[in-house]
Length: 170
Length: 76
Image 1 (cartoon, rainbow over the protein chains, first blue to last red):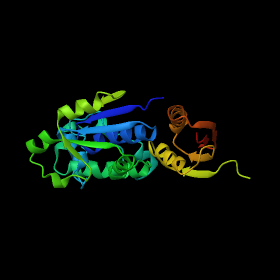
Image 2 (cartoon, rainbow over the protein chains, first blue to last red):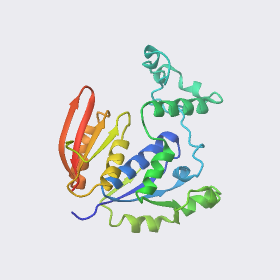
Image 3 (tube, rainbow over the protein chains, first blue to last red):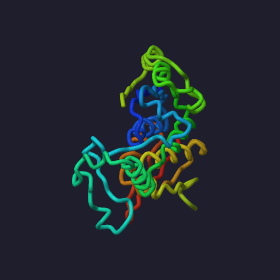
Image 4 (cartoon, one colour):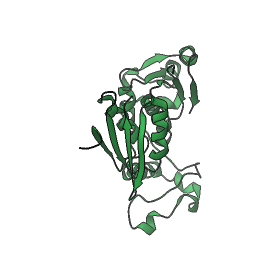
């Protein structure tokens, strides 16, 4: 079987949306596929050396379940998401609260952290491409990104994906 | 004699870690050797079938016992 290739365009920069590109990239690599991920716009956050700016917020996201990651079982089973007026999440520090809760839930469920998953991708030789245009647009210092990233433009993405067997936009 | 060459305990781990750990363990084995895996992720049942299909490694056994999932994969 000819080697299969996956290319992903990662455009989201929140903790929840950091998962799909890294889960899919690492799994595809484990299945023997060649993998490239093009990080553009907010997706560049996923390449930061320090991933602590990755946050999650229920604000404007009524689909997000909100369950307590600790406490008695009856309490953990309540989904507060649909019960709260969404405006409540605009209160200061709610993002930090929701992020802390989500990280705790991630740990409880045996789900890998983003730095762990990203390291597994790098180990599996997933190619990381960062959008040069966005770096300039958002005024990033390239030193804030992890090593091994190639700084490229849209043409490189298309060259990269021209022989891909699967391509995803996330 | 055990019917495997290496054992991987992936209990408590969630997608995609059991697959990634299995891939890593298989890298250390030689063709024909067998990896035994224990997992608790219910999604791993279908996932190890897909993993075997995609990588060409043979899934010799897949069974559930007491809420745990047991797999044996032969490296191709």
